Image (tube, rainbow, N blue to C red):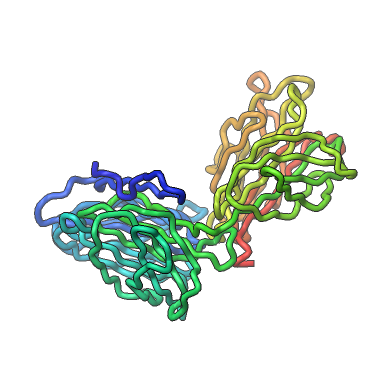
Length: 454
């Protein structure tokens, strides 16, 4: 284990902290590494195969494990698993491993026709200095100027160090170990588009910074994914980026409500919405807020629920009735990435009773046409009451079952056919009681996706 790449410091700005670790195999003489970074915004989990052996995989904005091989040429393929559990080959390459180098493959663009680029990155740098380079995958005809500031961290004192064009040739530069701030502008402009947190560059380390779209709350926003010799990525977010909040009330006693988020003397309030309907978003600075739900007259129904919002984060406050404690709020973090081949479904379980007895948990099963509950691969096994869990489903239409086990007998609390997960984005599925339905329960499905692709 090497030391921290970006060390924490007591400064007024946020400090990003990275930890650099070696790959899954120990390095030896005359050997190097193979690794995949997934920059394809709508991709599924993508797997790295080397000489027909599956090594590891990665989601969008992340990297596979770094795999060590002797210097030689290898057959490499990138694959994903479809809804029929078949491995689909995206691309095949012959990769030559070089001594003390990482062959970092970058997949970017639309996953229906992704682009693959090979970057050769030294595994380390010289004593007292670090290697730093930038790779632009934002899009064609989009180029940036990168500025580096040390000491005071101000843009006015920053030095122009690179002007990466789309899929530019990687050019690593050597910089002294120390604290820095990164700024990005459009090429030829001095208007700052992006400001990083203060970061620490370790000596004898190599950093490749992927410049990619953020696909979050900021329209046309940018994220810097920092790839090192670790098996993970550190995402640097724009320091001036905001977050966003919205709410939903599932308590039938209150049919028309609004919501407010308060910090100090500043309060932001949504429009009035009906129950089981999502409110409009309110944009806020990253911080902690006191949340209230108000009736039609503006009087507070409940108050002082804590919700914390990070930059570029999208949160939903779900108000529900706890059978023991009354109105409560659950916070769900929305995933806004425009996933096309698979989707994250966050299931929220607000069910607490069946036929007069308490329900401690339920199973949620997503079944394809012709697939039984027992055959299904997309299952949440035992989600507790007033809790949430995630499940990744394929880009398909499902019949969804909510099951409860009563003395060894499986009970179908509800089922819903033709539940469509074929649009870009991800989903929130709320399970709740409904006295107006024949089953006494209902499901509410909501899609979450960045405005950048809408």
